[in-house]
Image (cartoon, rainbow, N blue to C red; front, top):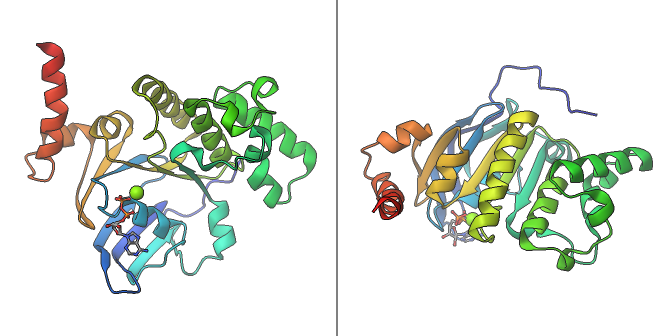
Length: 259
Ligand code: ADP
Ligand code: MG
């Protein structure tokens, strides 16, 4: 069953004056204000250590803000029942984050099973979702993660995130460990899939090409702060000092290709 669209006009996800501090008082995020629109792919772009993963964890309330508010569907994450909140959210990470001792089938069935779906409904859904990510269930269902290529594992990770049909997807450098050709193939397919499914996606990357290719908008992070939010077109035209090094890196590749 598809999840019903939210009945309110609030943004899918909203950060308002968010700060996150560790128990040792280290500030990992400061004064973060960011709105994620329903149905968009919002890319969180920034170098390693800039606070991207911390931001994702605030969305599904694995972390709670030290100040400010993170809302999902207009309600603060700290007011949500965490189980119900996470039901709204699929999470995909690098290498798929699969259980090695579970078959592909069992990995994908995990969330529906936890949700107490009936066997038959689970079977139909697992088949559908494996097909959706390009893995014929008859061929791949019984394999274990170590019997798959990196790209196939990543497909299973995506299938698992989609299994319970959550309206929101959080993706933390999901294609980061793949070879360039496989990455490019998965990026294209993911973009098409998202256009069909209309999920709200927050996608973490440190790769400027990936951000430009996949993003409806790009939120640029550095040292725990948001430097700006840009459409890919705006990003390419930006004179911002924070954007510049990314464009230089991007153009170096383009120029090398043209010369
Ligand atoms: P990114 O995903 O952009 O690479 P993270 O959000 O994982 O960055 O981390 C931001 C910074 O916070 C990094 O410097 C990281 O080492 C640090 N960090 C992450 N989690 C903790 C924690 N629980 N305690 C202390 N420092 C942390
Ligand atoms: Mg990270």
